[in-house]
Figure 1 (cartoon, helix red, strand yellow):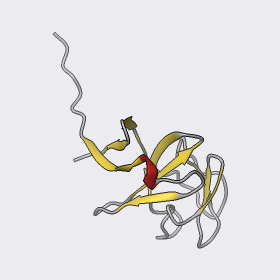
Figure 2 (cartoon, one colour; figure 1 turned 90 degrees about the horizontal axis):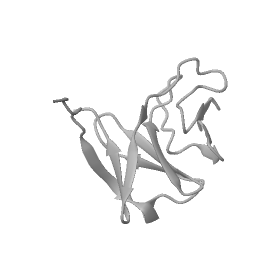
Figure 3 (cartoon, rainbow, N blue to C red; figure 1 turned 30 degrees about the horizontal axis):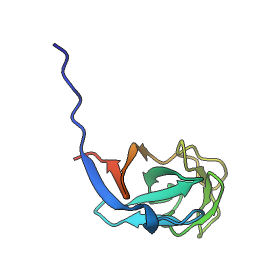
Figure 4 (cartoon, helix red, strand yellow; figure 1 turned 90 degrees about the vertical axis):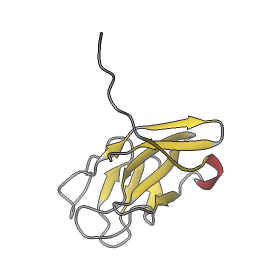
Length: 108
């Protein structure tokens, strides 16, 4: 018998709370930014790895978010850093949609 991985799905928001091209911040001790990219939902760490700015407040173009403070860019789908001054990627989290609710698989 195989052991199943422990999944901690946390309700983040409703689908209507995340407009296409906008970010949504899940406010917690370690904030998470959620994005709607063409009807598909993604979650990444909300804090820019260059400086302590919220990526949910950044400029979104397709699947790229640009930090509002110093313009570092990250891929929303993979967390990959795409431009300086950031040099480290942001963590990503699994997302699922059930009905009109968006859930994120978060570490304990």
